[in-house]
Amino acid sequence: MLTHRQRSFIATVEAVDGSLNFLDELLGKPAEFMTPSTYLPARRTNISLPRFAPHYVDLPAEVIPGKKKIKSNYWGHSPDTIDVAPLQLYFRCVDEGYRLFVRSSVRYKHALYLHDENCVCALTSPFNGVYPTPFDLLDTNNAPLAFGDLDDQATVRLTPAGERAPLMLQTFKDNPFTYVSTQGQQPLELRLNILERNAAYLNDPDEV
Image (cartoon, rainbow, N blue to C red; front, side, top):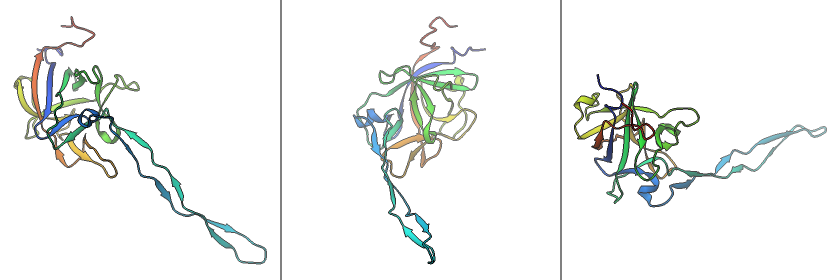
């Protein structure tokens, strides 16, 4: 029986259509935007005046300023072909599936998590005491793809471990970017190119 290390590998991943990478890599700058200002409805105050019926006073609507959102460390997608180095990931086999660690120079050693809005982003591991999200590999028909059936070059989909729903391209209102999430408009298909099999953790190179 193969060990976890023997079923682990390093690979580059690219979108079959368009470009996939961290948002700041796709944009060539930090991925920032401002959320819209929020307007609360006017409040009404009941003021009792002597010998008269209550009067209602309308107060001005309250404006809550927008906030800056920084999404540079999130996976993003562009329909255009962008000249950027493909993501290099370490697919670490664990009992639940694969945990994915970044081996690209950008965010090297970070791990991939499903975070805000169940979108994929890179965080230091463990994050708030939680280990990286485990994923499974699917073929283009959303059937589980076993390690023994995985060629060095393959077209695959990712799904949260134990599910058969592929990660999707997702957009949000008042948000200019396209993310990779558990829900969305269309499945994300990846071109997988395995560079090294039987790959160990960086901090345990002598692992069997």
